[in-house]
Image (cartoon, rainbow, N blue to C red; front, side, top):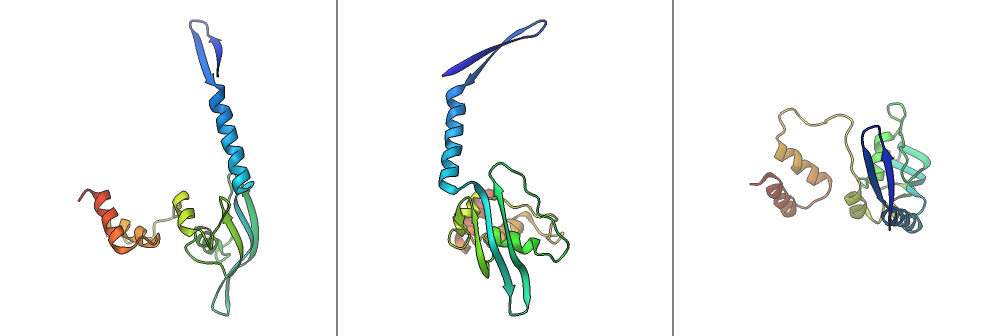
Amino acid sequence: MWKSFRCTTEYTEYKIEVSVKKDITHFVNLLSLVEQQGEYCVYVEHIMKKYGKNILAVNDISFKVRYGKVFGFLGPNGAGKTTTIKLLTTLIPPSAGNAYIFGKDITKNGPEIRKRIGVVSQQPSFEANLTVNKALDLYGLLWKIRGEKRAEKLRETSGL
């Protein structure tokens, strides 16, 4: 179903058509997503990360982020921000607690979660003479893409 609106300026008349069906479909899809995955795209509950016996990098944090919201993650140096991001991006496992990204448990659905998220470092941490291919290879390694598959993807990407 289409809904038409007429907008008139001093010199021109415009006809704007809006697909009500498309808007309703988008809304229904969003509701379905919320029903399937919960109200929150990020749900963290009492998560902790310990290294060895003495280093507690993340100590019992909990927070929720609703779909469509912007969330800032701030704190002083050494507060555990980077470690928390590594936990949420499934690069390291938590020592305790639960976390869900898009309704998926981070400890059980790493590959699926990583396919749906993007992470951009605050500052580049590469050496100045690192080539593009070496950087892509490094990212493939970080995302746990195995040797031959990673080499194949590099060939595809670089056109070599």
